Length: 117
Image (tube, rainbow, N blue to C red):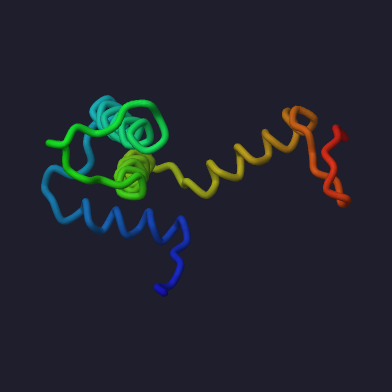
């Protein structure tokens, strides 16, 4: 099993990779287009595995894991290009969920029964 990477390490690893090319990061609009494209490919795979649309016999085998990886790579590129620390972004979102949305979902109590707190 390989060593788990932190979000900071992932962002640094992608930056080292992208920095070796003269073109560098794409523009924010191009990055949105890439992210949308990758999300569409992920949606297609999920639909093939869990939906009502089986693959054509002529279509190659791809996995949801690979498509999630592609989406993650583009997301990291997007964050890096805008100098956004994804760990800080994550913390902001969790803070929001734990304040604004704290009573939105049914919690599981210690006895295993769900109830609103």
